Length: 249
Image 1 (tube, rainbow, N blue to C red):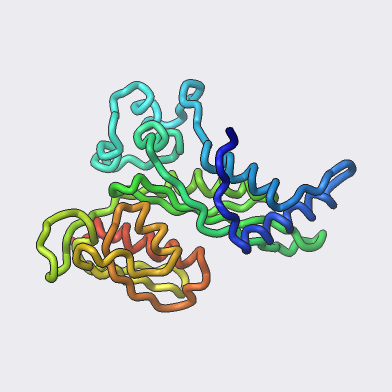
Image 2 (image 1 turned 180 degrees about the vertical axis):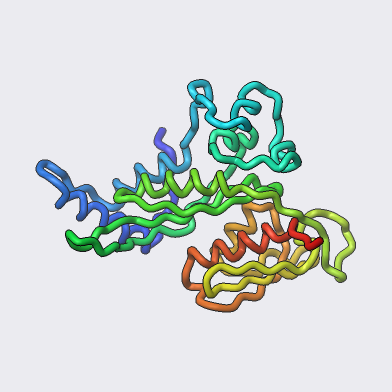
């Protein structure tokens, strides 16, 4: 039985239609496909994407240690200050990683031959238990842009310190942020304020997706700037979560 495909947002449907028009004009014999059929294939690859680690040849010291079994948890990677340069490392150490497509946008670049159209995808990944990453990818095809963004999001994976920092709650459970943190990207500045248990995620849709993947269940947010820019909004929330482990000496 064929798996159910989630409802396609109107903005993504327009991007899929634009890609089908570009492919129709891209060469001899190119066939135009409908937006539903195009995104059906994209979402299928999106939710069923599995990396074959058996044929993976690590190119870094950390990759070799992970494949040999000397490093078995993602906590050891950050405890030893290793830099993740291969997404396969995250696939091995965090097999239950979830990913969510935040935005797909059609962008243009001016060249000497004219305008060059590309698709820009923003992806967030996380295990909903203290690890989150956000990435961006560009390509002429939507699927390739999503794959690039997913790889970058895995390389940008960071730990998130959670706690119960609200004076209205004393449950000592990691359901919120431990203290007030701020993050900025472009003109967007996001402030995460600890909230008591049961409040939920008081934030925009983009911030909710990133916070949910990080494992934060209750938080108040305060934003400034052009939050309609999904890219900057997502990275501002990501930087705020990253600053939970930031300290000054």
